[in-house]
Amino acid sequence: MQKNISTEAKKYALRLSKQICRITQLIMQNYNLNEYEAIVDFYNSETYRLLSDCNTKLWWYSVYALFEIYRTEKETDSVFNSPYILEKNV
Image 1 (cartoon, helix red, strand yellow):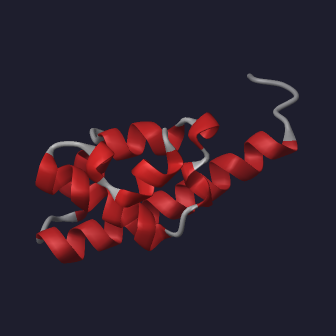
Image 2 (tube, one colour):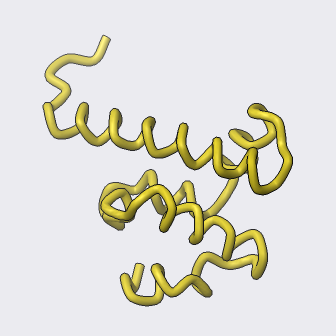
């Protein structure tokens, strides 16, 4: 059992889980995937890897901006083609 988890870490985890839920819904709607497929696809993406790294601060972006980063990754095979990533210099 982990003790003394900081309040900031808890807030970050909660925010991330909410964002992932909403992004998954957008993936389901836009790519005609079921919930499981959408979750697996997102968790295996570079977008998720960057989002889950609190040092990149991508969690500050809106769900729609994060989805656009994901969409760019799917269409071009790289998150680094996204204007959001280019402006952030991740």
